Length: 404
Ligand code: 13P
Image (cartoon, rainbow, N blue to C red; front, side):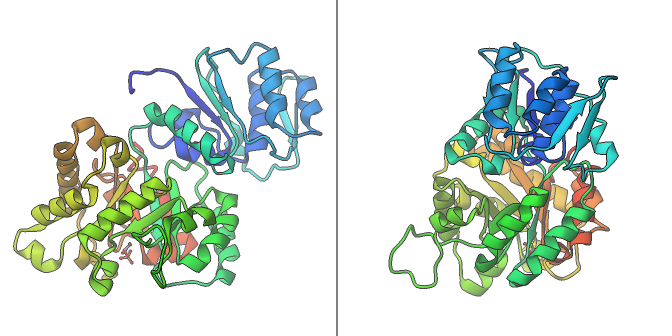
């Protein structure tokens, strides 16, 4: 319900990436959840004694109890907490300035955040979304649904690249290069054997992790397949479906894309559904018709509620891995036509809520212009996602484009 004016106040890095996508970054505190919780409580006027007291304990229930006791939390204030966040030490000094020790790896500008006033009915969410149990995750998603229009997502597709041993350095370098103000979800879709390692290493920079394919079957005699349930066990939150490389090298059909989309949604994994025309189709002026067909096929049988949990990636085949990026006008035209298709299949509000990414030779140089297009909400990036510095530049470019 977009009319709902409740503020949602997230404390902690990961949760913010989920919630404050492109419309309310001013309510976001980037940085480690515990540290920010403490600093933020200080800014809310919570007395120094309280903050130094919890410096020896865990955040969770203590903060909730405290807020309840101090009238910050009202009956209508929904608070979730991961409960076991290790604490750092922060306190207010005699000038009422927040001071901190330990956990202070964040650059100074991240600390100069002014909190909005908490009103009755606001929602406060502590800690990392990914650390919440699945039931709470669902609840959080329901609660924040009204706050988001659609999310900006920068997703890397590593394809058949990298090894487990490469991951710590990648995560470190990514973290070091990420812009302080990030206004998109950042995801890497990795080969299956890398997902577990990436999930743990990526925690440092709130990295979403995904797979590149999934079996359309739940389980059974399907040698070589990997199920959505198994991906979920590994911590995958996203999965690419219908990538053109799977369609052309492995004969993946639109019916399979549809079946895979459904099984991913059943397992709370966000499908990134790839569509896109070949050069011959473009030359025969078939782009929009063909892409509309692919979208209709992928979404066949999905309710609007399921549809808004999907992401679409428009990847023209002739632009993938070729260095021939679609012009921003070409990409915008097709992405707008995809949104029009979604509006026909569902309704305008549903179409507006679905993120559409562009993919195909996107890089640090062309990202800002592509992301500035009104119907392009992010990118699916192959080659440039393998290098943390290049990938970070694309992430930084969302600040100029997709989240305006
Ligand atoms: P490139 O960015 O290497 O062109 O790959 C695009 C792609 O296929 C992402 O899925």
